Image (cartoon, rainbow, N blue to C red; front, side, top):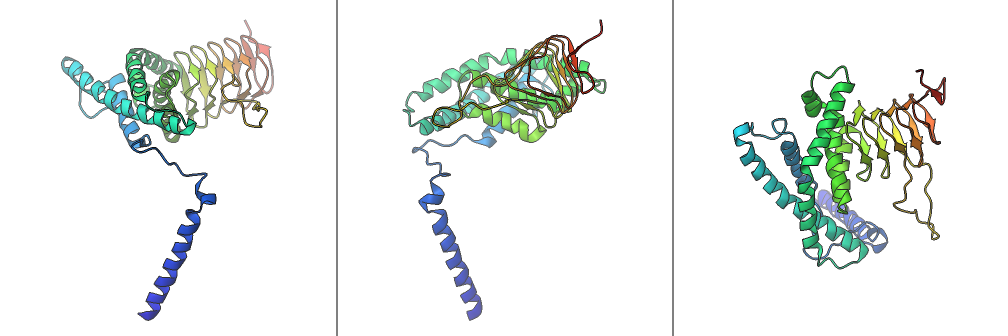
Length: 307
């Protein structure tokens, strides 16, 4: 018994030393988030519920616990949107407060700003639904294995990623901090598709299979474009400020014009333009502009399509 007590005492002494080292300013200062009183961090669990409710509002009948009939749809939708409004407003406010702490700014006006942002976002929901319906159409028409547009809505990682992206992008346009990135990373973790909320993506967009796709912050993608797994639309270089820090926010990712297809494993880097109707073959590495209607492959680069 005395031996056990001695071992336990030695263990506690060792843990005390670990606590001392973890509390030392040299270790702690770089990682400690010390919010102002009452300023909680955004909640990933709350955002998951919000996204679940938004999925049910945008795609009624596919998601959500209740089976919704047309004659009761208005009631269920109104109740759901009321809950989304209250929960999302709170999370947006927390995102603003997080940004204020980081910038050492006054957080007092943020409550009205969060209210305005969530109202503007809710007003955009019909357009978000229209865009997602076009993505489901593109997935169904572009994949011979798909039996219906509904199958793509319920099952396909592309539609899950785009549901998150269309929502995150709208919040990003409203200058909401942190929350859009959290929403996009939720989809990234689930699907393996990494789309920055800042990327502008046109209607009828489809990512076939999807795993490993990366779409950077300043990408601009036109209508009816299609990517396959492992495609990277990234930056070629990262300009730096005079103090050595990276320059933020400058256009540095590709532009894909309408009707572009990029096959598996292709890497397209820098602020270049891939012309309308171009097909980029698998495993290509592209850092220069590509003209319209080109067909690029390892065997044949920049070759025009046959008439």
